[in-house]
Length: 346
Image: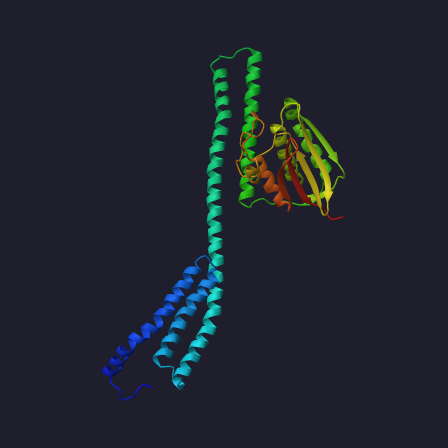
């Protein structure tokens, strides 16, 4: 007990007298706490926060009890009860804060990873598109200059140059359309008007548009359906999904190869599968085939025109906008792309 008549100097002298004993008692507890924290350095943040709270409380209790000479007076008992109350309040708070901080740290790390991946994807996209835009533009410029300078003058040659300019222009227009569609998807600006859509009509129209490309490459496109389902979707966007998948399959299938389009129903979803004969995709690249501007390695058909690398990314975005799922796998002589879409309510 403190003597009320004790002077400040005497109190200071008394404090200096017991300080070495208090340090001798508290220091081992602090060192033990530091050791525990070191051992838990790879543990959860909640556990670390709990130990950080308990170590100073344990050191305080040890110091107070040791200095008192283990004489449990009323003052010491009150001090211990206060320490216990502080512990009961601060430990749950520490666990809660630890979990919140850990969750926020994980979220921030994932956000940084997503941002870095998006930035890398944007740089890759700009590089690919810049290259692809320069090629048709250079051709158009060269042919236009030839026409303007009179290098080409016969009607047949002029007509041929005009047709080639028209073809390159359509190619540029398709690339611009792809970029616009992709920007809508990535910006979350895609708004679909969903209704009951017969999948047979969508597939038939989309395949009819791919006939010229398939004939030029001498690729057969076969369709089989166990059942023609009606899906909940938007007709133009679903047609674009089918066109992108089929045109991608035709581009990567060698001449005299076959592209198979299969339709069916699995549970509450319609199944659309497109198989090609591209030679397969390395397993390490299968998870990246839907990334923006990803074109893969030389494992796929050599010499195939790969396009802008946006078709599969757009297909994925449109499928997910329909609350569906899309996946790729190696199958037989090539790849199999599967799309699952919700069935329309009957």
